[in-house]
Amino acid sequence: MTLLALKNVTKTFRVNQREVHAVRDVSFDVREGECLAIVGESGSGKTTLANMILGLFGATSGEIHFRDSALPARRPTELRRQIQFVQQNPLSALNAKRSVGASVRLGLETYRIGERAARKAAVEAALEAVGLEPELARRPPGALSGGQRQRVGIARALAVEPSLVVLDEPTSALDVLVQARVLRLLNELRAAKKLTYVFITHDLAVVRNIADRCVVLKEGQIVEMGETTAIFDDPQHDYTRNLIRAVPVVDQTEVQLRDKLGRAND
Amino acid sequence: MRALRIIVRNPMSLLGLILVGIVVLSALLAPWIAPYPDHNGAVVDFLNNNRAPSLKNLMGTDLVGRDILSRIMYGYQISLVLGVIVLAIATPIGTLFGLIAGYRGGWVEIVLMRIVDIFLSIPPLVLAIAMMGVLEPTLTNAMLAVTLMWWPWYARLVYSIARGEREEGYVVAAEVIGASTWHIIFREILPNCLPAIITKMTLDMGFVIIIASSLSFLGLGVQPPTPDLGSMVAEGARYLPDSWWLTVFPGLSILVAVFGFNLLGDGLREALEVQS
Image 1: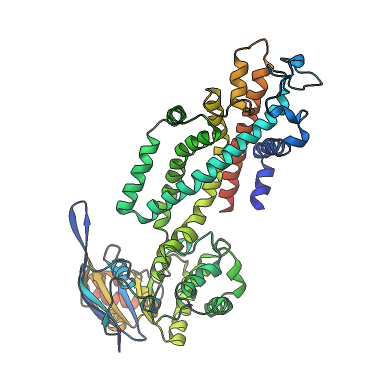
Image 2 (image 1 turned 135 degrees about the vertical axis):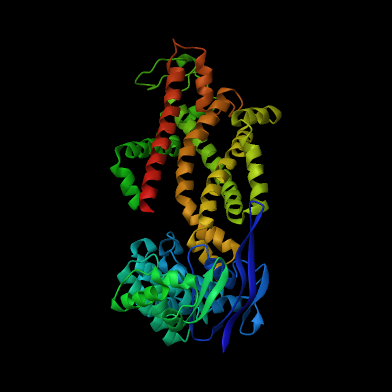
């Protein structure tokens, strides 16, 4: 079943009297329970897409449908709860002046979920679900490592039990080992809580690890879309091939894949 | 508590803390520890007027025979009350202006910050003098005048911080969640402005005391017989250099207060920066 559908979405910004098309006529579906990656280099429009899905600003034209109805410009609380967000930079994503618990609790408070005691329990449960000690709720984010902070960011998104989570490069600010752990956590949580992910990234190694399908964006337009394995095995577009070739070599399969692509290209 | 420890460890800010402590304690305890507690008003003792410092009057007596040390202690009371009231009014107004302008942006920012600019473009002392010229020169009006020229600086300070914080991830996160503007401004952004605000308030206590003293020096502030450091300096200035104690001690007491608040303010800035 389709959870989220973008229909001919276009976003134009006015910069210094000039029109810049950040996203041009983009349409795709996100199925319930899948992880869809939006891939592209910097400036390809992926973050603009994410911000529109999150409701930070509206599309210039086109519609975004959630569970078969168009998302209104002013979203009701229930719709906001359903779509949550995990950010790229774990250092700025948490308010340094508020406790970890207060950050995780914000959604529960805003949506008036539960009483005070129930919220406290929910915050602790959310922290435990991402592999953190519940006692961390009282600490300031400054006392946490980057990986721990990103887990708090994930806990904040999942505490309100959303159905769709938009992840904007959630691992790109972390070192490789921590990246792998956070990705594993995200995979486990998706299975356990039957979540749907829109995973925004420029990192194709990550995409192979987590995404069922991907959408490749270039200059605000979709150049390729399909099953992740299909796209990696047989990219149709030069841009995608270049992206795949740009992945740093990490293991033998990568090397073989690159050889294959290289031969195909030469 | 950690901030306090950092301040105590730095000799300069410790000195500031001690000076401010002396000023505040002598103001608070003036009725009990001043050598001549009744000399804060219209007391005349011509038998002892204009005496040089002695064991009986450690800082000498003024032209009508009142003990200068006692009057300085009461003068601190007025200065501190003035400072606290001015900052208690100016800081919330300026902070609110700055928070709203910095967070909302757009035309709200343009309107609010141009209002601030208008106030900032008037030379503060001139505005105060003009106001005191039109209104009666009373303590209340002195406070009003000083407050009017003080709040825009807080608006500027908080605006510049809030503008930067607006782009921070935690603010975006609160927006995506759908938290109210009220929550974002006061619960998310304001705590990040507080260290700078507290530091500025401490530094400003010194500056408010200077401005208030300048106004009374010009005869536009606190009126006699109420003791005020600025008017004491003004009264004694005509009798320099012979009756030097009339001006030097009130002048030094202004210096001690301002210097103390400045050192403490600098120390606080460091301490709060380290903490965050």
